[in-house]
Each structure stands twice: as structure tokens, then as C-alpha cells.
Length: 110
Picture 1 (cartoon, rainbow, N blue to C red):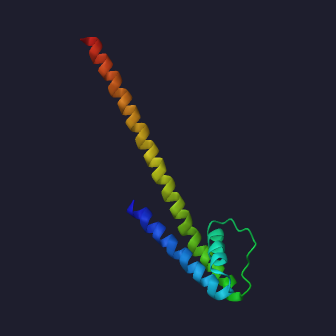
Picture 2: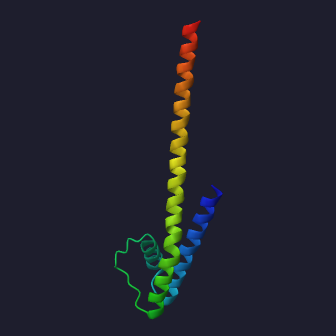
């Protein structure tokens, strides 16, 4: 769980830095900068905002290369946690069913 918190914290820092970067370099509003950052990191890429400056375009490519891996790591970690929780619940259910069946067998032998 600590690792997920760490990854989410890093992702929040990347989103915040991307938002500040695009606000300063492209001159977009805070909302547009945040929106572009999230849409770019999530690989949705609507295309309604496009960096117009050379530094904005270079920054976007660096941002994609660094941020996309982190975004994918967060999604992967959440998936692993959900999978582990589901597996644990299924195992507990199977164990309870086994104990129940064993209790029935013991009561039949008496």
C-alpha cells in the first residue's frame, strides 16, 4: 500500500509540474494546462489543445516519455491490488466452504 501512495504522490507531482509548465510556456489558463496534462498522460489526446511553441512541444515529448510510464505504473499497481484482494476473498470463501463441508462430515460420523 505504501508503494501505491508513493506512486500516486509522484503522479500528482508530475501532473502539477506539467500544469505549471504549460501555464508558463504556452500561456494557457490553469484549467486548460491541467486538462492538457491529464489528457496527454492518459494517452487520450483529444487534440483540442496543441502546444504552439518549440519549448512547449519539446517539453510535451519529455513529459510524455517520463509521465506515461508513471501513469501506467499507477494503473498497474491498482490492478494488482484489486486482483490480490479478489483472489484473497475467493480463497477465504473456498476455505470457509471446505471448513463447512468438513464440519458436516464430522457431524455425520457422530
